[in-house]
Image (cartoon, rainbow, N blue to C red; front, side, top):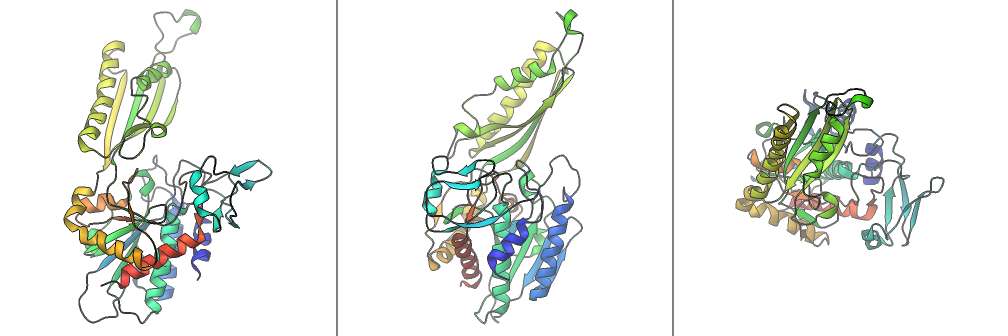
Length: 402
């Protein structure tokens, strides 16, 4: 199966994760896609292709050389971000001559380099886009497709290679992708996640990450007689949010700068909920951000009464850099594979996280590799077909490398 056909097939399966679900996977669509991947891996001749009880897919590409070589793992996640609709994706492949690109004429939706300057870097390529009403799902179905393409090529080639193991995880987008990953069963010396973006990106630094939630308990009474009696949970929640630094938000930070990100809010006068993610590359600053979140709730409890504000912070993952630095040969292997297929490696910090961050702390060094996509998690997500092909070639060279 051609790489592009694989990708278009996979994005047609809705697999958004759901942070409010307690199941694993958090949504049934991920399990449906997992079964498809197992069937395809089995059909191409992979060994021990299976999906475990928690929805993780594993398979082995046997070595075809007699001498012992390191066992390499390649990992991608099956879920897509719940931040934008992933239902009824209408993907299309279009040539990009430059300038504005109309995605949906009826609704006047245009992908423009004025809003996304990186678009101009892809002039002359063929882009996979949506109709502007859903995300595309290249994060991370491009990684899934590229690994599957590599697996099929390895199983058909006479070129010498060591054993390669592949895995596809659920619920990465809600920070649970590595929760039930069986590192011992996976049995690799090191691994890579194919979960990056722009062609050339090679990442082994990521955010320290936590999720944070706030529940505010109010007291309702008829507004006509509310003076001195009503405690409006909504306005108290707004007061809490205003105590966080206005400049430390995703839309006002870049590079190594961290942030507080309000992702969801709901409520009534009686009760309100706010949900945040907290991010920072620097561990000390990360710990201070978490402490500040809790301190603000304590301060408002002193103002409005004990138990008015319930704050909870839960760590998601940590910066993998300290776990990768002792294994820089793993990064160098990836750089060599990139250069071999004409990709210039660009080492950048991830303003996000990957399953590899958690796995690195579980004893499996696991940098992150580009997949070629742009504008993830939104309606203007796209991926150049040519860049996706180069990423698949890179994975093949990585698997065959010395």
